[in-house]
Amino acid sequence: MGNKSWLMLLCSAFISMKVSSQEIPLVYGVENTVPDASPVLPGFDELPAVEPLPDPFLWSDGSGYCTDFRDWSRRRAEIGKEIEHYEIGSKPTVDRRCIQAEMAGDTLFVRVTVGGETLCLSAGIVYPEGEGPFPAIIGIGRGSGSLPPEIFSKRGIAQIAFDFTQVMSHTQKRGEEPINRLYPEQTDMGAYAAWPWGISRLIDGLEIVGAESRIDLRHLAVSGCSFAGKMALFAGAFDERIALTIAQEPGGGGAAAWRVSETLGNVETLGRTSHAWFMESMFRYKENVAKLPFDHHELCAMIAPRALLVLGNPDYEWLADESGYVSCRAAREVWRRFGIADRMGFSIVGGHGHCVLPESQYPEVEAFVDRFLLGKEVDTNVTVAPLYEKVDYRRWIDWWGTGKPEFR
Image (cartoon, rainbow, N blue to C red; front, top):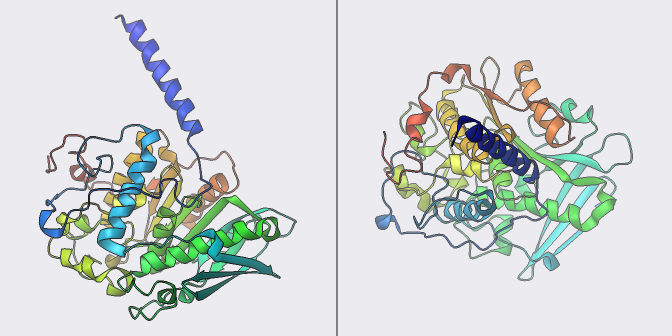
């Protein structure tokens, strides 16, 4: 075949990829497109040690690779079940008939009844001027999380505050939290299964009240910082109705990979993180994190094909941002595989306080908000991490696709 023919084939392939990437959804209308995945879940003694980062495209039974976007929802669901099984516990599913919701002024009230017990959630909504429907951000703690409220208010975006203590406290007492009234058998549930459950129930409530909420359900974001940055990441990973996740300084147990963090200094490793946030059984892996069949680059990748922006702050060693950088680079390979790498970005810069967005990061946040909440055509190719430009992240992922999990 001549050079001209090869060129035509390459152009054709590029055009096909471009068309298919345009057809890949930005958000979904259900919490999970594949709710019933059944991955292989070996016991501790049967799990092999995989020292580099696990291959996110490899099916859990080792039978082959997810190479087509049409299969990604099933592979994503496998990863989710692994994270639930080994790390956070099951995020309970709820029959919509068990949920009631209403608006009272600018406050959304949601009641979830399971087994004769009822849990009540309330969330105040700060509306911009106008009639709506408005895109919205669900902020953890306050309406915009730790991000400056004006980024959203001046763009006509509503702000919904999630009070996580209505579901589970920051330092849970197992079996004694509000959510345990509904699920008394799940005493091992980590907070990162419980809190995202609460965020999903707020979204259920918005769906139930419909137009009365004046919220555009196709353009929802979630954000939080530090432990709430982890919360936002888990919420976005486990609910496909969230169009944009902004995880601000989530640290270890968030975007950072457990395996990479083990190679660093005084950072939040698996053995050092809060026991309240995860299942107690996860901590058996603290001496050998390589036995976990997943890592947190795959938690991030669960958000694909939707949008994710991770914000870091290397001035705080505990956040393990070098690990976060490697993990983000690895996760971004999933978006890149499907031709949508500009839907996942990271900005890891210092010179500011913890959970304080510096002026230098405003453009990245504003670009993601403008594109994925407002539908503007702006550049979201954000890969900013000047301190880690020389870090060899590829050594952690070069084995992908070879079937041989070893450093190369």
